[in-house]
Amino acid sequence: MKRWSMGIISALITLLFCGNAFATGTIKIGGLFAVTGPAAFIGDPAKKTLEMLVNDTNRKGGINGIKLETVIYDTGGDPTKAVQLATRLIKDDKVNVIVGPSTTGETMAVIPLVEKAKIPMISSAAGGKIVDPVKHWVFKTAASDHIAVQKLLNYVHSKNQKRIALLTVSDGFGTSGREQLKAYAAKQGFTVVADEVFGPKDTDMTPQLTKIRGIKPDAIIAWALNPGMSIITKEVKQLDIKVPLYMCHGAATTKYLELAGDATEGVIHPAGKMAIYDSLPKSDPQAKLLKDYYLEYKKLYGEEATTFGGYAYDAFQLIASAIKKGNTTPEQLRNGIEQAKNLPSVSGIFNMSPKDHNGLDLSSLAMVKITKGKWVMITK
Image (cartoon, rainbow, N blue to C red; front, top):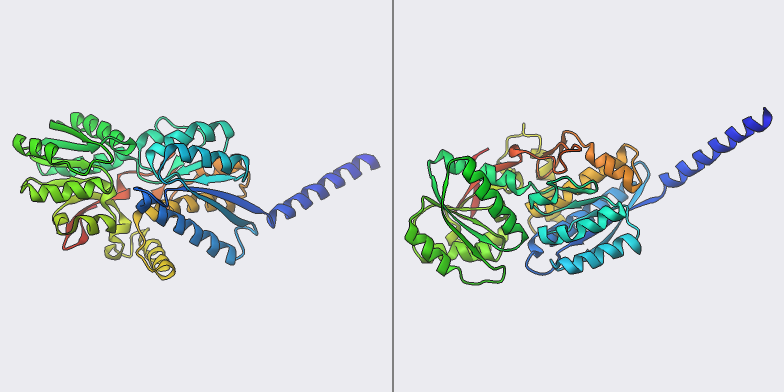
C-alpha cells in the first residue's frame, strides 16, 4: 500500500515539475513570408507584424508564463524555396506552428509537407483551394477568394451589370479567382462575354483590354495582384474604356494606389476593414483592435499597417488564443485553432470548425470605392 502511494506521489511530483518547466518554456513560431519579390507587399508587413506581436507579448511575460520565439525565412514568393524552408523549420528548427506562406502557389506546395509532419500551418494566402477541401493541419486567415467573389458579384448584380468581362492572372491566385468568378457568375445569371488571361510577368495587357473594349461589356472584373492590377488600371484609362472597373480584394494596398496613381479613381473592390478602420463606428467589434494595430505598427515601423500584415496578426491571435487555453504541442495548437469562436481580429470575426479552416464569412469584407486616393465604404 505504501509502495502504491509513493508511486502516485512520485507521478504527481513529475507532472508538477513538467508543468512548471513548460510554463517557463518557449513555443517556436515559424514564419514563411515573401519579404522580397513580387509578393513583398504581402510578406514584408506580415513578417513585421508577427515580430511586433511576439516581442510585445514577451515583454509582458509571455502567455501563461510561456515565452514565444520566431524563426522567420524569406521565401521570395518561390514555391520551391518555400518547401525547402518549411522543411528546415520542421526538421532543424523544430517549430510548433508555421505562419505563412504569403501566396497561394507557395502554400499549395507546402501543404503535403506539413500534413505529413503534423505541424499546424496558418497561411496568409487567399486561394480557396488551400482549405477546400479541408486539410487536417492547414488553416488560413485571408478571406477565401470565393468570399471576395461573392461579395463583389453581389454588388455588381445590384447594379444590374449582367455582361461581364474577366481579366485574370495565370498564377495560383488568379487561377483560383477565375474559377470562382466563372462558377458564381453562372449561379447568379451573369453572362461572361470575355475571359482573358495574362502571365504574372506580363507588362502589357492592352491586347486583352482592346479586345474587351470591342465587346462592350457592362463591367470589367480584374483578378490579380501587383504589378498586374496596377498595369491594368492604368491601361484601362489610357484606352479610354468607360465601363466600370472592379478589382479583387488584393487592391486594398497603398502600393496599388501609388503604382496606378490617378487611374485608380472610381475603381471599386471588396476590402478588409483595415482599409477603412478610421471610418468604422465604435460599436463595430473590430474598430478598436484595428485602430490599435494601425497606430502601434505605424509608430514602430514608420509606415501604414495593411490588410496583408493583418493576416499575420490574425494568425498570431489564433495561436495566442489556443495557448491561453493550455494548448502547447503542435497537435494541441491545431485543435485549439480549429476551436476558435467569435474571435475578433484584423480580417474579421473568426469562427473555425472541423469543416471550415478559414472561419470568415461575407461580413469580413466591405465594398469600397477609391475616391481621391482613399478608400470609401459604399456598402458593408
